[in-house]
Length: 583
Image (tube, rainbow, N blue to C red; front, side, top):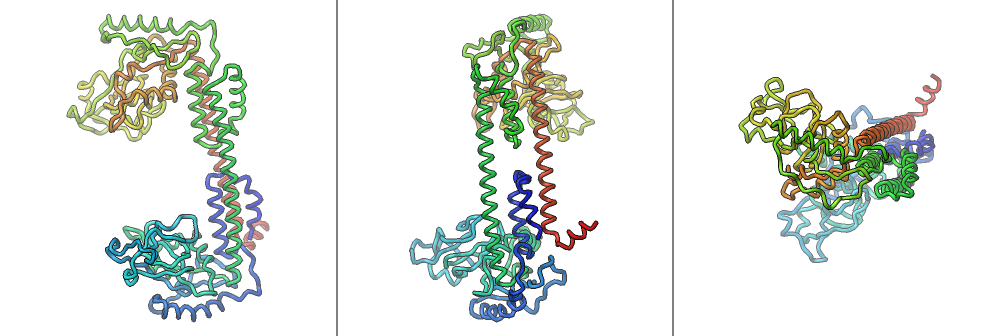
């Protein structure tokens, strides 16, 4: 066996997403191939063991009410894999009595609360990841015994439906329903724990899966399980294998606990660091920010941690804490005056309708830096509207070359359009029915309905397009080629804005935000020059987050490749390794 190098390198691969689960599977794989513990020449070979088992098995069939495969059934010529010389391949039917449980029906008429009733062992009485079944929730009347199957302590139970093929050992006598198979081995000739571990191996799982394939509902009947080919070690080696498997599974438990401890410590440090950024102390903020940036690679080892980092960056940006203020910047109030002047011109020119002014924001959600202003979205916009359902307007969906693009909430992602390979199109006459919601490049799209409420993106396609009733169109007043659209996009996707959106939504069967909510939406507006700096800084930090995510993917891939190589090496026969070394 070549497993030593795997353990030597384990620290390098321990943080691979599935490293410990794969290590557990690998241990069981080694166990059933005779590679986990050394063979002992003094052990009685399995071929002799099988001769004695045959006599005991005959008694099981005769006295235990078990059946066997009919006729003479031989092993397939092709052995599933190589095993040591002292081992033997056999059918499970050769070494065990196997039978299906039974359910007295209607079961409710047989259930009893009498403590003298027979324990009724159901799948629900087992716990995944454990070995033994010790108690049952229900009991049945003794008259139900003739319609069921009695099991005794030490019997193996195998689930044969739903999560089929999962093994347990019962510590109690009781009756089993037809969702179980009982597997009873001759006493003192087979280690039940070895058979249990063998059932947990990938070899047995795949064999059961193949046997159950093809049915509408996958299940294992008794004959399919009887035909399982079993790699049988000498009895003494079975016991050594079980002891070694248990020892290594305990090691896996400790490794898993250590990894979980590392993750908890990292989570606490990351949470504390991000909390200090999101609710900063003015006196320590620079030091806190410097520490967080310097420790990014240590604090962000999972995608969910990077997601929280992105959210913190956006929160800092829209609260004026990401970039220093410049005393020379023109205040946001001057920008608002120019926007108001342009809106008045558009009204006078008949390009937009004059609307009733909205009330100013009196209760400011949080304090802003000097030169920033609280403003409602309507004050920055020339149009806020939403689309309509083609069905309501009697308009049909068509092929792409027959109509105009139709954007739904499914296409509005966080900061960009999504599912562009699933775009829909409607008849061209929809543009005449709903002209106000025809899109222009640069329009902001905001989801108003359902689980994606508040998700915001920019329409950046050079196509004629319209929207449905679940999407709002926000078209800003154009006074320059400034960064306002990009800043608002960052703001709308920040936790701060999303909290506002969720707070203003109408609670119905499907939560939604009205157009009035959208028009009244509060915006923390920086000076124009600071908008430029904020957008640039956020873009730079998001690019850094992208690189961190890419490095996580790369590191995970390297760990997986190393684990694959080490597992392959550990499973390779020594002869193969010598040949590779010679090459």
